Image (cartoon, rainbow, N blue to C red):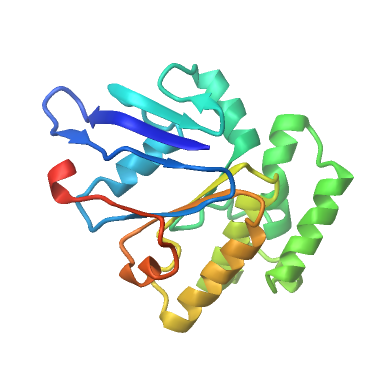
Length: 215
């Protein structure tokens, strides 16, 4: 489901060349990409999402070879196969949470299918924020925004879910609660967590550590 082999990336002509470790992740797996600041975590995440293109190596995610795909192919692939929970929520502030969750379907299909609306209501209820569906993003707490971000990333039933630093600002109790939610809601997907949070090592034995010498 995720395969990385011989991947190298460089910003511009004079930037340092980053070399990333080889790893693979099977369908339904849970995996941790662990590293401190400066180890290339964000760059690797952008490569895995097709937002950057590597200069060398193989990047295959959910059946898509990312280095050779066109921008149009990548846009379609992201909308169908990928879910991303960003460290900071990127919502349209003038829309309600419900409208934000529906927006990708409206943009790609021109409408929101009834089954998606039903799934949205069910997911918001399970996440404990159904009562905030008509609220604007700025009216939600940080925790509520994070849960809404999880709902948005998983609503279309992606094959692979990337979570970017989902626990970095949370205490032990809330960090565990958020990861429980991610595990539960992404039960049918492959989940890759990109983080510096050492607390998650015990949770996910399948772990790849990024070192400063690799970036």
